[in-house]
Length: 426
Image 1 (cartoon, rainbow, N blue to C red):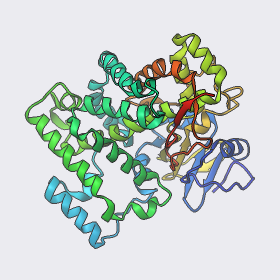
Image 2 (cartoon, helix red, strand yellow):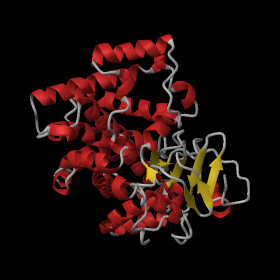
Image 3 (spheres, one colour):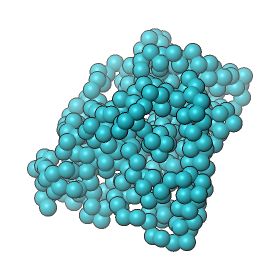
């Protein structure tokens, strides 16, 4: 196996980093195509190489996403312990699904070619520009409700009091999830992210004793999907289920998989975008003053925030044939970690990349992925972030971080603050 770079750099692509950007820079400079033998995982970190991979789905398959996130590249079935069998039996009796095939249902982020196109065409019905634009008044209403305590002088945490409730509320309402389940919705989302990306993920993934939240989610969504098939409403699940026929129709399993995707991607991406960008503005007061003086530049701020501190740091692909990147020969069937967070800080593409700059021309960067797998909910995330900062920026001028050290989510996949409490500036 040939690597493109001589220096040996110890780098675990599945390890969480409080600040990954220094190691990204070193990888870009010294080992832009890196191989971790223990993980059997390649990493690409330069902008041009990341874009090459994302633009070539026929050679770099997205089917790696589910296997890498939920199994760390392990395609084998879990050990058949008593706990595993009990969990599977619960799926059989309460879901009426085959537990050995449920996780192999079509999944939007893990399909390629015609299967991906047909599935995306169905779910796109709920994400047209007109439909997303119609949600702006409700997004603004939720944001105003979230900021009311801050304006009353009460303690305020950007993450807990704004970045979390806005996307959770909106995506739950879009899907038609009953209000009494909204808190559970966030709990299920946090559990899934933690399960897939925590440092002890290899042990937790097959410890079915702690999987009760997963079963709760599956049962609730199975019931909701059945209700919408019987009595459609004006929500997203009803829209997805409407007028389906033939081989392209989504099964209940596939609808639930899609809801799971929205549950995680629709919540966590926007939550971390808002949290990261609020923190970046506090660290770049000159840019805060720029957008405060001219709110029309907030859409550009959101784009620069996506580049500067990407909420999704890495995606995964699997080679369908032998290929070569920057002199490194990668065999067929190998897993590749594609570091969006590094590409977006590549000084070969972005001058002074470690600085937040609203005036930067950041077009064409992979903030929400790229190509056929461009994030389905990107327009919704942009809407939520824009409205959030249109409302928050005037308040940020009078605020500062209440904690000197920023606690980060312990994850290799997503990047964002655990909390961001604010206080009035001295």
